[in-house]
Image 1: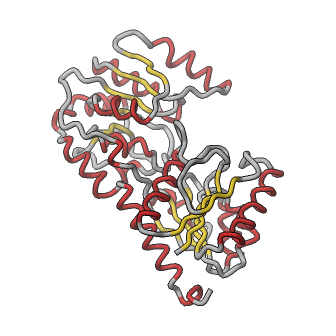
Image 2 (image 1 turned 135 degrees about the horizontal axis):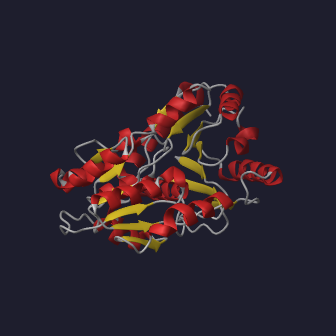
Image 3 (image 1 turned 45 degrees about the vertical axis):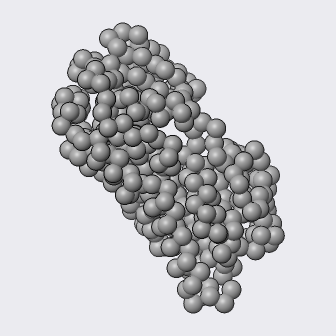
Length: 349
């Protein structure tokens, strides 16, 4: 089977540092090619993923109208040259516009909240040839309002990149790993660590907007290098593995509806429990009292920190092996491909 995948044009596949969608696309490519699928990729020109055919986007900005037109033509051309049995888009539904009315089966995957308007007209124009997936049931619930068929297929991690640590030191630090912004709850993590009397290592990139810089200066910087609160900066995969593996828990008390958050699965892969909030996809990832805690308040967060010793880190790793490993998720996508291509409407295409 020939599958044509697309990723957003801003970042290469795989990404050098951050880039959740691009990381998922890369793992999907590897898994499909191991199963002898032929895979084409439309992505950023600097992409290094090993594929059977590569087509670089002509435009680099998803939100630019001129680049959108150029990328729509790029995808149409790639489909003509590669002749796929199915197109699987992790980029913009607008790029599919010239292909929506064709019988060729198509999947549109969302890693963030879908636009009601674009998902709705995409569903109508495709006449049954377009299905949707969301990286969580939470995203699918949002999308189903627009119509169409939606399948939840979670994000995944490459287990081999994360070293399971069955035990950590009694004085192991807490770790915050995410973008440093209010919706990710960096300030909440600091408050909980200080009140619990625990060290906290903060890793992640700062947000270089006016609001992001104000947040850093007013709510993060004043607490650094005091009471065990330390900022270690952005981290690559190897540093992430080491940082998470030494942690008593990863604490990211979000203030928004997280679509999925690969870092939560990455922490569990290291055997590291997660402390977060029951918003978005978190209830689909963390089982309270088994591989972490979902908290509603600062008081809850402090209590969760105090109860970390009651958790078995083996359960954290097992959770990822069974639900969020690349092998499991690639198999789910492959099954969906087979089901779509074998449907009577597509069998003769």
